[in-house]
Length: 216
Image: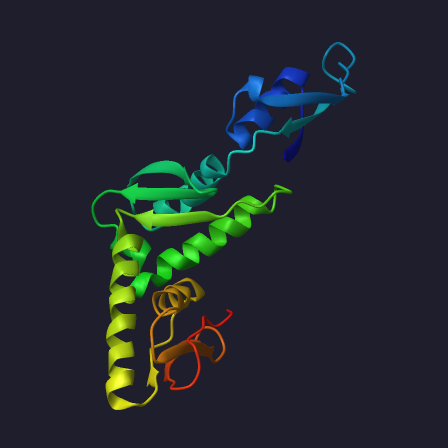
């Protein structure tokens, strides 16, 4: 729910100001007239502005996410189209276009940061939280596949060398991919160590314990 209060010479003008700020049409909001205002003497002196409270109840996290990201993309000089779909309760927004590396960043760090900020900005206005995932033309699927392959390769290394293998620092999402990829692997288990943003996964060689997924 978003509530905006505006004042103007007339109720209609005040409502229009609120609609412009919200970026929605009149039929999408509820309007409460707090003060109808008053005309001044001869329509010139002693007048009082009208004041309204406009409430927007449409819960559309995908739309709100795009609205939040538009000025950021503009500052980055990024032009992109997008698709929004729901996948198992998750709002998945995929961007398409050329030169989108600026919003991916090194190992997806910029994309992860934008996703984190978008979730904060959108969910602060709703009681029921929605998880929003940002993607760029299937980048996350490719990255997940690469990390799963890396996890299996490093698990083989740990078994061959009979030594633990320490991976580079990763985001919580990427660490989870490693944990899931190896949760049923024989002879190894995974643990996360360190503090953000340098927290990393260790693939540990084990002989007498079942592998497990470390809680993040």
